[in-house]
Length: 116
View 1 (cartoon, rainbow, N blue to C red):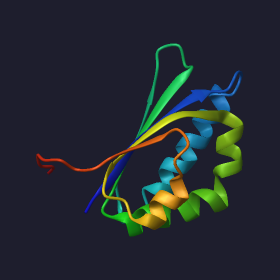
View 2: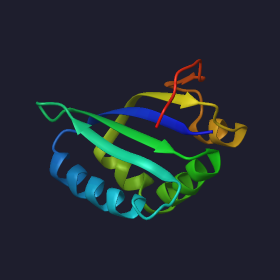
View 3: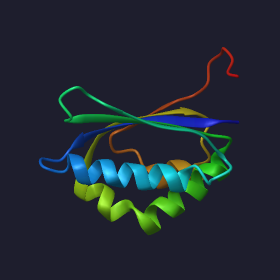
């Protein structure tokens, strides 16, 4: 079952250009992950708020991404962005929930509808 999320971050003062370069590097690397279905970043008009939308084929694919993120990008990401909220959609595994945590994270399980 797919797992997706919207991560909202604040762009740290003076870090927009560095954050853009990091985003481009992360997007290129993430595009090579076969279990990642979508990886899109959205920036507010004033450059202070960013949303990251990601969709994975399943929880195993989430963990592949999270391990790669932690190893290569977590420190630089935290230097550029501050997480303000995260909403996770679907039925993530216990391992994914433990990795993402509960602080500032809302989990919404699938209730109905369809996706193509």
